[in-house]
Length: 469
Image (cartoon, rainbow, N blue to C red; front, top):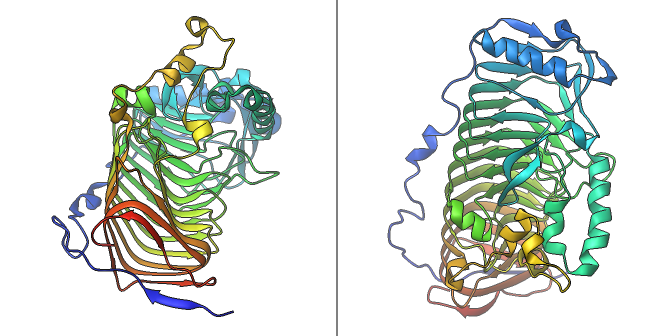
């Protein structure tokens, strides 16, 4: 098969950039600034926890956490075995150690996950607590070589059944919010949190969500959600309206976005208006999943100042995946995507401002009384006005030292006539793919020392592409 090799486009000098990069000194300041130091060990077994895999241990585990924190902190841990539990809530100065030989099993009864005030998929609402929660705390850690098995398959089945009922009614946009599935690990409104070395599998919904939090380190965790099936919406790590975050040395295999940055959806996200910013993701691997690095689709509060470097994507659907919708609003900017290897991905650069319309846009079918709807339905139905406020903006994206082999498509980048994709800088990007792809509604895209090699001999199809293409 003949391969066509070509270098793409002109070089554009863009203001406020130095060698295609902006100042990244902030990247030295991310991550937890402290961690629990007390070494007193508290065994959950001393409060009656059973390691038989069948006894529900929520009360015993929580009692141990509470006692440890009340005494100034220390290490809460387990003797080897399997421990079934519902939602537990870590407290200040506590390190939860899930050591090798310990398996924490998530209850498969939704009643064991009490509903709390939280945000899910960009909307603030009542939702079941996660299996492990760090909410409104400081100086907390989770460590160990053990396994957190969320046992989420029954929740996947519930969601799929609801999809089969909701979709024909024109309710695709709300089913994810009505199908209340527990997350595995939630860090919410907290500071100085460390999550290290644990393995998590079979999440019922998102695996790790960092929400409204700051100075968090996630280091060396492994996520395996495609165990005994493929769980819908089982994101790996979601960084949601949070700042000063460090994610490193992680290995994710899931059925949705692997490393994902979010900042709120539509009217409710614009109301909250909290960005995700100052995030470093480095030395990580993505396997199955929708995006090696995904920004969005919840972009309302803005996503900015992100460094994703020294990453590998093996079989991931997309490499850099920036997505939003015309009701989201917000700006994705100052994103640095560098030193990346992708093997067998779907699309190396997937960028859209009109993502998944049946999910992204809400319309109430006939026969419903809006006055009697649940609050979260009303929030999603609430129109963004003026409409221009809902337009997302993508700009100042720096992509360098990228090697892609075996991709299906190199680029699929579709902006809006009303909001063009601006100032994308590609330097040292080398892609081998089945086809080149498309760029539409873009301005000042800069390519240097880059090439695309295609099996079908195509070049990038440029439509409404401004100067610098």
